Image (cartoon, rainbow, N blue to C red):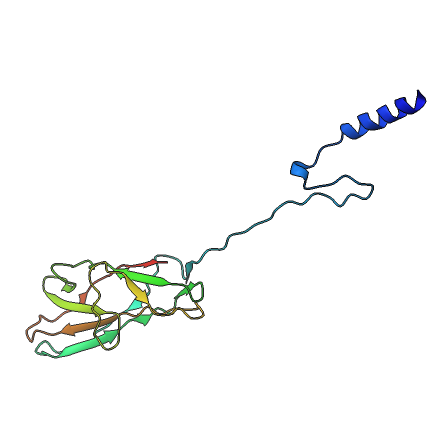
Length: 177
């Protein structure tokens, strides 16, 4: 009878131990422990870093021109050195551009006191691919993903009778990935 009582006490003690979840762990004289899963999901993304305030990606400047000029002037976006656009390397990135502050049937530079100049934006230096209003444009390659310059080119055809003054516009770029 003493053996049955000893066995019962051992069985009762073993039955009070916590049971492993779904058989993943085994009870033995040298327990190895029970595993658990650890996971992190890293997604593609972009980060604008630099000075405080609203980021300005750069400037597209058509320069100083004569009021009598009828020439076509080309310009490309010059990145703002105060900000950097960094994205996950080799990811697919698109940009779209709004119509700017002075949109009226097209993007326009406006002068304080009146007067506008119609201009067009392109995604290539050959000025073959015009960027429409809110049109998604694929950025060809983000390569290493470091300090990306947006491919934005502008073309302005002067009318020959523009009023003197400074003409400006602000266009908002939206990035998607």
